[in-house]
Structure formats: structure tokens, C-alpha cells
Image (cartoon, rainbow over all chains, first blue to last red; front, side, top):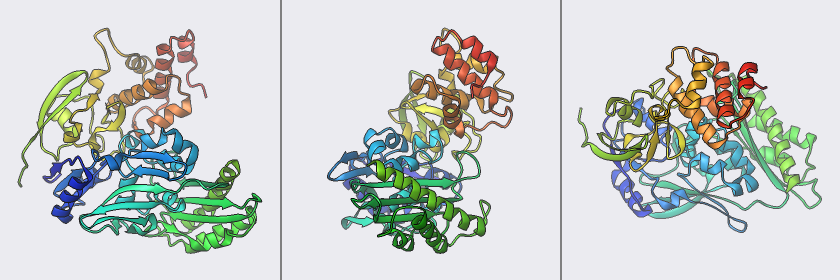
Length: 292
Length: 174
């Protein structure tokens, strides 16, 4: 690895100040499971300062409130998420994602903030965050702003965060009554792989427990960024939850996907998998909605 | 090429207070092996995929190639060198030997540390749980089956189960 400097600020203000003054030469370091490898492989030659943000309290928050929802600090490692009773109970789709990131040792360090900001199109936490209507709290030299998570990834390895800005936390809405979500991923092996395709779906039922009141469908690894497929949601909202609507939503998602052929899969296989995973994600979301 | 000022890091490694100097760019794996002489952790991939570098840091299993040595400040680390006790080998180590769960041995330190982290947390894992927990530890030699049996054998022995011997004979329970 080329020579780097290392700083570990203790407050959010300190972290923002360091990142603002160093600009593009600095990167925040949370779990390091992407950044350290990228630095070592020479993929970030401009970065000469890593700013370890793990001591900043706001980035370590993991708080659930039935009115406010879930606040997840950007630097919370996956193992804290999967072992948190409130998340397991209220946000099982987050657990779907967190328990599939890498393997045990990776989950000992890796974070949702890092997964979003590394901005791999195949990121395993992002479809879930898209489907849950997550907000991102971002701090920078000009203050703090909150934007929908869909506004963050802009391309492979790129985000909309401006120079000097850092992701602080995620805000997940409180679980709506009669709602559920599910994340799924297709990999060739049993574990540890990068997604060939992944998908997440969230839906909320009306009081009749049959009609879909609201829905979101997100697909990953089939475009430069994760896609929130409005056309799929349109096939669901106002319709009866079930095979017919799910099939149409899956077809809409297949049409929206823009996969490439690479070493993990072909265009045809990926498009097919979008259809399968979206249908299964919707079925899983429905099952969870019916349990709420 | 410029180097940066070295940092002084204090940590507890295998129960002993340790201080070392390192550059920020050095991984914990590199420092364990080349500064501290703890060569049990191995560099298999250097990118978080193979688990040959596994250590336990503040009670969590981590890939030491994906931790900067400076991040170890103030932490408690257990490496393979800290698994045995003055009383003898850890049950996992004996089980690996008795079940022939190693050939070249390069992956073995990582597997034993990872298995210890599992049994510390779940003393009675089923085969599925063992395989998924150890999914980040790759072995090129054994085909994994004897490794799984060794972990089951060690778990049985550590739980003091009377059928520990029988489990070792019949192998995987699935």
C-alpha cells in the first residue's frame, strides 16, 4: 500500500473538519473491508489520509423507537445489526441483508455506510435500503442534510456525496401496520459470493389485508446502480396481493433491468433472475406483512 | 517513496500487553507476522476472502488483513498462538489433529480461531451453522468435511457430552 496518514477524530465536527480540509485526498474509514483492500490494490492512488470514524458517536448509533423508526449509524458493523433484537423483530429485511454481507469475519467489521458509499452495483444492503424508503443523514462543511438513499449512488464506485461530506446515519421509517419487506440474492455458491442479481421488495396492505396500499421494488447488480423500479410498484399498488400482481411486477422489473454480461452471469440469466427474485421477494414481503 | 511517521500502538495480544511501532499503511496481519513474530496468521489472499488471517479482536472474528494495525489501539486480540493454554492444546486443536482436519496446514490457524469464535458464542452448533460460520475460511486441501467433524468433536468434548467419542466415530450428523 502507498503511504497513508491516519487520523481518528472523536467528534462529528472534528471528522467533518478533517475531511473538509483534506478534500479528495481523504476517505472515511469504517469497517475497512472495501477501503483497505482498494488502497492495497492501488485503486485509490489519490487517497493519502484515512479518517477513522469509528469513534464518532453519531456513526455508532443503533436506536429503535416505535414513533421515530430506526436510526442506524453509518459505521455500525453488521454483527451489531444482526444481534439487535429490535432490528430482528421490526426490520427482518435489514437482517436478510446484514447476514449475507461477506461472511462471519467480514460482518465483524463491515458496515451499511461503507456498503452504500463503496457503491458497488451489487451491494447487498442497498436494495433493502431502497425498498424501505431509507433516509441518509450527511454532514459536511456546509452543515447537515438528509436525502433519500436512492439519491446517493450515482454509478459504480461513485456517490453524490460532495467533497468534504460524510455519511453519518440512516433513518428507517417505523414499520407501517400490515407491511413487510424481504431481500434476496442469487449467488452461484452457498455463501461469500458477490450477487449475480439481488432484489428487495416492501409492501403495505390495506385494512382488508388483501389490497396493496403501497409498495417498493428494488433490484441490484443489473445496472450501474441499484434501481428503484417505479413501474413494478405501479403494477402492485391498488391491486390484490398475489400471484397475478407479483408476476406483472416481476415482468416490469425485468424490463427495467439493464444488466451486462460478465464473469458472474449473462444478460439473459440476469434478466431471468430479476423476475424470479422479485417474485420471491414480494411473496416474502407479503408473508411478513400478514404477520404484522 | 515517502514513509510516514510510525505510530505507537498499545494492545493486548493473547492476554499480554503489547506495544509496537507501525506505519498507518501496515495491516494488522503484517504487523503480527513481521513486527511481532506471530506468524500463525497467514496471508492467503490479502483481501478478506480466505480467512487464513483470522484473529479475534474484542471478541469478534475479523480478517486481520482488513484491519489496519493502528486500528488495533486499545483492543484485545487473540491469535492462534493464544489458543493453547499452559495446560495443553485446546480441544479444537486436539480435534483437528485427531480428525486429520489439516494437510498443508496453511488454513488451519484461521479455521481454529474462527471455530473458537463460534464455540465461544454457540457451544452446540449444528452442521449448517458450522459450515456457514466457517464460510469465510477456505481450504484447498481437505474438502472441509474433516474440519466440520473436528469442530463437532471439539464442541461435544467441551460440552462434556458422554457421546463425544461416538460423535467422532459417526462423523457429520446431517
